[in-house]
Image 1: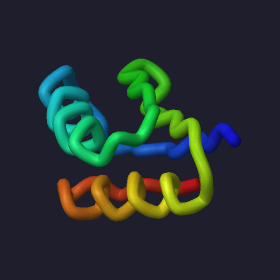
Image 2: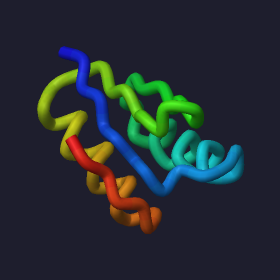
Image 3: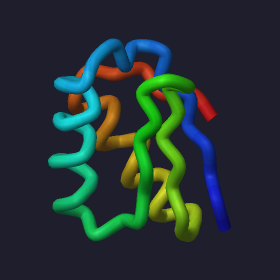
Image 4: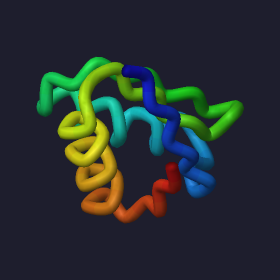
Length: 64
């Protein structure tokens, strides 16, 4: 299943790199799009929850 998470407080490439580094460690298949401010997660609901938790831990405010 594909989930799209809106993250309005992604402002720059540094934000993208922080998200990339955190989510790569989880093994989740994902993509971060700076222009649309969307993180796309390819996986199950557990993957979505893990991604949301990681984004919160980084200080972002993700919305489904």
